[in-house]
Image 1 (cartoon, helix red, strand yellow):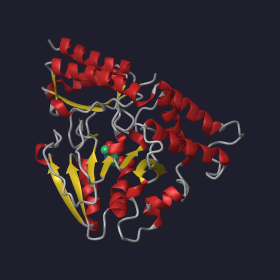
Image 2 (cartoon, protein in one colour):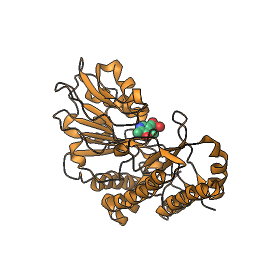
Image 3 (spheres, protein in one colour):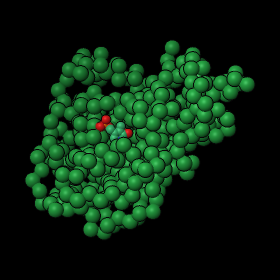
Amino acid sequence: MKKHNFSAGPCILPQEVFEKASQAVLDFNGMGLSILEISHRDKAFVAVMEEARALALELLGLTGKGYQAVFLQGGASMEFLRVPYNLMKVDGKAAYLDTGTWANNAIKEAKPFGETVVVASSKSDNYVYIPKEYSIPSDADYFHCTSNNTIFGTQMRSFPETNVPIVCDMSSDIFSRTLDFSKFDLIYAGAQKNMGPAGTTLIVVKEEILGKTGRAIPNIMNYQQHIEKESMYNTPAVFAVYTSLLTLQWLKNLGGIAAIEKVNEAKAKLLYEEIDRNPLFRGTTVKEDRSNMNATFVLNDENHKELFYSMWKAAGISGITGHRSVGGYRASMYNALPIGSVQVLVDVMKELEKSIQ
Ligand SMILES: *Cc1c(COP(=O)(O)O)cnc(C)c1O
């Protein structure tokens, strides 16, 4: 039986994507070859890469606006390093908003390159909210933020107005909600949270911000090099890019980001209403900053843990255990998770309430 998969990542993808990707492993495009055994230079795969790059920009509303999309390897963690390499000037300065573990890791990778200014942090409150009052130094080379904090379950609803280029780690909420993406100068996202399997990272960058650091950048780290080589500087993650393309096509057929956003809002509302209503549970973040992708919550009385566990297991639910640094529960509701799965979880929470009265 297919599970109700709330995993934070790698995570659920649309069933039709699993089916098409499986088919391509056996026979890609009727070529008599598996996608796993063709050259990345084969015109069939070059077409996949071109379409994936173009479709990513199209869905974000960035076609023809001076942006380039590339699919690289190394995960979002590699971009923590590539971003300062490509954007921080020699003896420069970068501004970071510290909203959680991933933001913190990004800061650590930038430190060797120059001055990192943490404009605000919610660390002392275990990252249960998004800091909103802060100013960005006007001489910073860029401002870096994390749109959705996968581990703590908070999500940025607004982004600062600034003349400094904005860099955003959108790993866990890209393609989930409408935003004016042209406000961002560089967006990156590991595929495995909302787009595809692990192994590739989407980077969308406004070309005009590149090439200004005055430092020598090794080719493998250099965004300009990857753009020039059309994301084929070295062998790309062929299968991960193909599967990401299938997911992007699925999203386009659904009506794009605006259509999935409505579903995502309905799913989040359904679950948060139950967390707030049910006396056995409480949410772990401040309400105004709650993430529509990752809902974090705890049992008020840990004694009910075993019973709850047996009930959600029996209902076919998978992946709701909270991150080891937070504990409790985390229900990740990425694009491909059906609202029916959220209803199953809500029903189990109600059943638990009834059974211990
Ligand atoms: C998972 C995650 C990362 C790390 O991604 P890797 O691909 O494992 O390097 C970074 N940022 C955010 C917001 C994430 O959710």
